[in-house]
Amino acid sequence: MNLPKKVKIVEVGPRDGLQNEKDTISAEVKIELVNRLAAAGFPNVEAASFVSPKWVPQMATSAEVMHGITRRPGVVYSALVPNMKGFEAALEAGVDEVVIFGAASEAFSQKNINCSIAESIDRFAEVARAAKEHRKRLRAAVSCAFGCPYQGEVPLEAVADVVRRFRELGCDEIDIADTIGVATPGKVRPVMETAIREFHIEGLSGHFHDTYGQALANIYASLQTGISIYHASVAGLGGCPYAKGATGNVATEDVLYMMNGLGIETGVDLDAVVEAGQFISQQLGRRSVSRAGNAIAAKRAG
Ligand code: HMG
Ligand code: MG
Image (tube, rainbow, N blue to C red):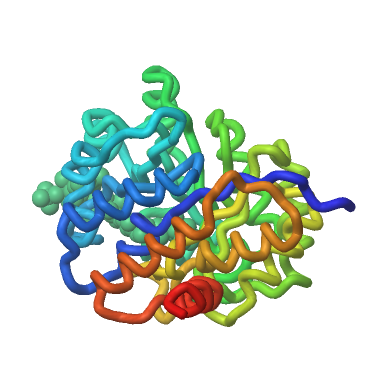
């Protein structure tokens, strides 16, 4: 199959990237990061998470962040929402896209959101109805679609089942997520083909963490199935607090460098993302893990 000519990159750094940071990052820094990313041309920035602050303390300033950013017309600002309490907060904060997040693994569902997959779908159904009523975009994440830190193997049928349930809730977009970065390209094809059988391909996305260094190869394998939405995190920030040992998402700079090389249009300015990556890495006091980002920054410094 020919690769897509154009892809949508969803920048998840401000949420998936920062949620796992131990030291508190000020709302001002988060706001600056979101503004820089939106200015770089991303059509969609995952900016916040309206979850329990006891579970994910770093996201406690989400309302402040949403109120503090300069909204760029045309940019979709998304936030994670686990239940109606989160939905009310997201609505008040002016979120454009509500992201419900479930799992293809029963064990991960329990650890991450403290309920079974079936219970989570009941909760999400209420959120989905409210999102539709308020004309918000609705996206859903399927965590552990390629493997689980607690139960190991995740059967294809489990992925199919959750994707089907999310389709029935009326989701606009569904993310097939490698939460712990264990997938390899040979696994990507069957999982993505399973998802494609259950949901329109234009609405499916690949969300790859880079724990084992496979994320770019996995994205390439996924491009070969025709999927054209990918998540990435500036400077490769991130990890999930409920997936021990999992490192960040694939670095956005690396994905953009690959897409540019393949002649695939993203509409995003790589140089501006490199700068945003250097900015947030300085704020966190460590070097970016983006290979392309560091190479471009070094070249620029001469
Ligand atoms: P629970 O303890 O079962 O919830 O947690 P509860 O309903 O019993 O409430 C307990 C307390 O939390 C109460 O407060 C609630 O008010 C409060 P208290 O009375 O004790 O003071 N609470 C909330 N507060 C603020 N916002 C809310 C909210 N809901 C309840 N929305 C719950 C259940 C779902 C809330 C909890 O498990 C939770 O917040 N989990 C979030 C975990 C999380 O954010 N994980 C990381 C994101 S997922 C991810 O990274 C994967 C992804 O990137 C894709 C991939 O890579 O796979 C998306
Ligand atoms: Mg993730």
